[in-house]
Image 1: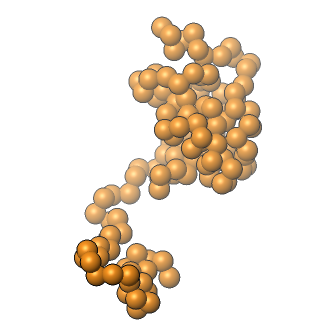
Image 2: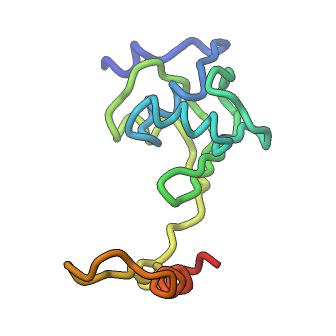
Length: 131
C-alpha cells in the first residue's frame, strides 16, 4: 500500500499542521497552519505553533469549522492519505456534533430593501445571539 510507505518509523515526529492536514481534519494545510496561529490547536493541553512536533500518543484538540475535534495520535503519516486510511491514524474522542435543529436561526433580508438601519442591525444581532 502507498499509505504504509508514507508512514514514519516509530521514533520519528512530524509538524502538527502537516499531520492535521494529512489525516483530513482540515481541507488545506494553510487552514491547519492558520488554526495553529489563531490558537485553535492544542497538543496535550498547550497551544502550539504550526511547526510543533507531533508524536504518537499525543492528544490533539482542534477547533475548526464550528466544531471541536479531540483526537489521540496513533500513527504519523507524512503525505495526505485517503479517508479510510486517515481514520486509522488517530483515535477520535470528539464530542458529537450539535444537532441541526438547535442551530442559530439565519436572518434573511429581502432583496432591494437597502442597507440595514441601526435598529435593524441590533435586531439581527439579538437574533444571532451576538450581544
